[in-house]
Every structure is written in C-alpha cells, then in structure tokens.
Image 1 (cartoon, one colour):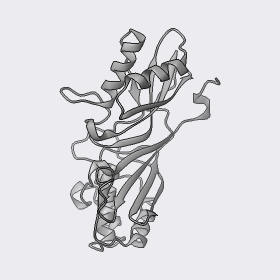
Image 2 (spheres, rainbow, N blue to C red):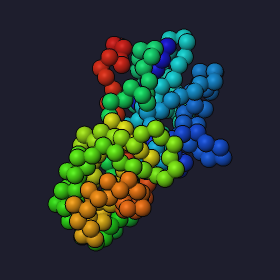
Image 3 (tube, rainbow, N blue to C red):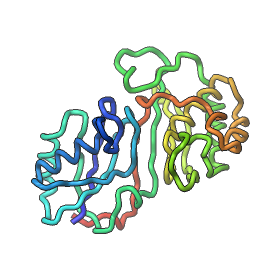
Image 4 (cartoon, rainbow, N blue to C red):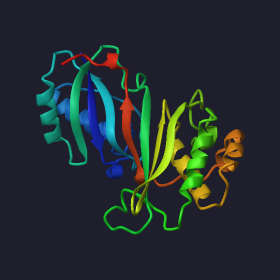
Length: 250
C-alpha cells in the first residue's frame, strides 16, 4: 500500500528537506520515526526539496508499507515520537502509483516581510525597514505571467533539464500593519527561485529599478542580472494541490 503524509515543519533547525550527509534534515527525522514505529526500514519521497531554514505549513510525502495500516493510530504515534518542530496532520491511503512529487499540480509559497522590528517574529520574517512601493511590486508580478523561462532566478550550476515554470499566481499584500506577504503559485519551482524573485521585487519596491526592467532581467537568463536572494527564514511552503483521483476514499 502507498500512503501520503500531510505535515508541517519549522525549518529553523534543519538543513532543508532532503537527506544529506552530516546534516540534519526533515526527511531523515521522518524516516527514522516511521522506521522505528513500523519496525521496518521506510523511505519517503517528498513533494519538494525545501532549502535550509525554509518552513512548510503544508507538505506532502509518500511511503510504501505492505500491511494495511491504522492511519489514525500511526499519525498519533508518529506525532508523539517526532520533535516539536514537525507535525503530522493526516496519513491517507492513495493509489499505488500516486507520487508526492511528480503528481503535484501546483505548489504555493508565501514570503513574509516585517516592516518594523518585532522581537517575536525576527526568526520567521525578513525585516525591511525602508518603505516599499507595493504598487510597483505588484506591477512587476504581472510581468512574470508573460514568461515561462526563469533561468535568471535559478541557483547557478543547478542540474535541471528545463528552466520552464508555469506561474499561475503572484501578488503582494499587506497582511497586517507591520507585515507584507508575497504569494506565488506555479506548477514547479527552480532551486532558489522564489527567494531570488522576492529579492528582485524588493529592489523594485525600493525604486532602485523599475518594474519594466524585469523584462530585460528575465530575457537575460543570467542570475547575476536578477536581485539578491532573500533569507530562507521568511519563506513558507503553504499549499500543494493534487488531482482528486489521487485519493482513495476513507
């Protein structure tokens, strides 16, 4: 049987999602927990590979286990086993060929910017004290829809076959009196893409460059032409959508 985990995690203590030598990752902690509870070596496949320090309020991963599981009981036991910065919300039985990464229709990220100093959120939002022109930043968002090759926002020397992404949503909003939030949805994202887009948007909001300059930046396909990469701690994976046919009725 194949099962999907729905979970969230605070990425502060982890070197991203994916297993790597000599560094603690979310995948490693989950695999250890499942293997301990099920008394069998369990490997999991995540819906994405968030970088060091990035958070997820909604993440999915799949694993296989031959006997049918009591998913509610397993979710309870797994939450009891896992550290406080990883939470399991649901475990669902899915079709045997369902894939947490390749079947995802879209992914949505938020990036949070604090516009004033706040001792309670400095670990979870990037502080920008200068005034940002949100109207210009949203004008720049509209330009993103004109393109599908985003090599300029990709981390250099990334081993990918294509830099094409279909951006479905992108906008800035004032989430509270001292918080700005960027929302972006696409079928896929390149490594470092969201953080590079946000850094470029901040330069536009600070009026260092104009929204129309984004055309030239994207057309250049050069990472050096785009803005800086904002810190990881303000980035959250918040939604992943799958076809309805993925799920097996409970």
